[in-house]
Image 1 (tube, each protein chain N blue to C red):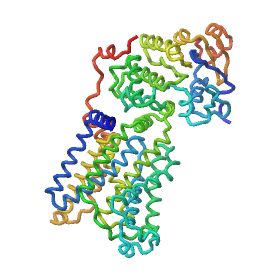
Image 2 (cartoon, rainbow over the protein chains, first blue to last red):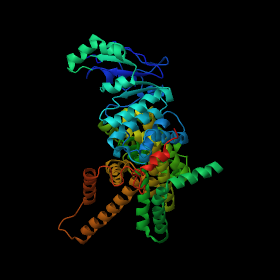
Image 3 (cartoon, chains in turn green, orange):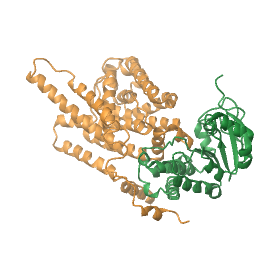
Image 4 (cartoon, one colour):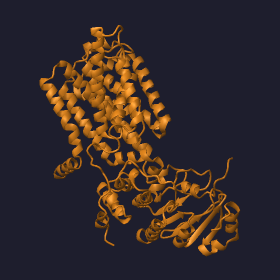
Length: 229
Length: 357
């Protein structure tokens, strides 16, 4: 058996909640998202949405069950326009064409992308790529969003704008959000509850304050990166 | 009925470029039919049949992003099936002496036979391609190439259906220019509609990022499979028209050179767009005919102290390499021809389009 990227990790995410997933590099955060979204099949363990098991099945099954995600390195449909990027996500969720276009226009407006609707995604400015990817994830009508470092590479004002948008999503759309980020400022402002991984294992879970004071968390960060959260 | 007309009106308004593609080609066909000689007429028919094969490739390759070398094989299936269906029992007795007795008396009209040829190609595609639709990149291309080889070997050895590796002859020359042109235009529309359909859009998304497409819920394997079946039907249909154009052919007609020409046409024009498929076919056909004429002329007039053979193919191969190096997306890359620049709108558009708070 090779390395266990994840071992005995268990977490729950409720609709309307934003859960922060943190941990040093290589602790298994992205692997966990890959497993939940169905891109990786775990050797043991399962993820459920409303009691329906989504692991060990083709990845599109997880999406149909209500899980959408973004990627640490943005993965847009570069040869499609910004609008088509969002429209196709609604279509893939089974929405009719006219409604999918309407939903796309609405989300592009919400994410400040309206004037870019006819631009190929591959030609978008970097700061807008993450917004588009998020609009695409939301367009699926997902009940759970998994966001892998949504603020990476954004400058402070872009990050703040994104934060404001993100914070409103659970209330307006009723989704639960799992967010990975190394930007502790963002995590602390966004999440009431945090889940901490190190070496593929859960080392702590609780409110931001509880986690911050947890000696195991402090050790994990000091021990690996030498930088405390 | 009313909603259908509205639908067609919307389609035309939203897709003016489609007319820009079709009209010149239709004019070319009409003019050739009226004033062109026999030679030009035959070049035009061959052009339209090639166009169908390239469009069929575009439907699969252009949307899924997976190159297929198998399509000319499906063209062969359509050619043989339709040939067996249109030939008279007397002609079959000469041309396919080992033919299954049950098929000998069957004689169908031309277009129904060609349609059945396309359907058989589609059914074969449906049965054999599902497992390879989950492959990608080199593995995918190589497996379609293997499929071409398998089809070739079967065509060359199924004496009870194809007369084996020998030539099949005695077909009626049913395929005239109006028929070829009409179906060519129909398949341009089919490829266009497919590309812009929900299936086409989802497939093009999977071409750009398969993981992202999966995680928005696109069943990538199934959609590739559907695209392959549709495209195999068109390739088989084109094969039926081609069979009743040349009237004599052997399994070798559906192999490497033909695959190479079809793939070159698609790649030179730009596989991602229907405009690319059409323009690639026009350019490569023109270049091919032009070079062939020059080559023949050189040989005829003995302009060189030796015979020139195969220069046309070599130059086409060079063109293919140059396009792949200089402009790998082909001449018409991501957007259809005349789609406009597609830049961002003015800054005030954002506030105008934003939903009220």
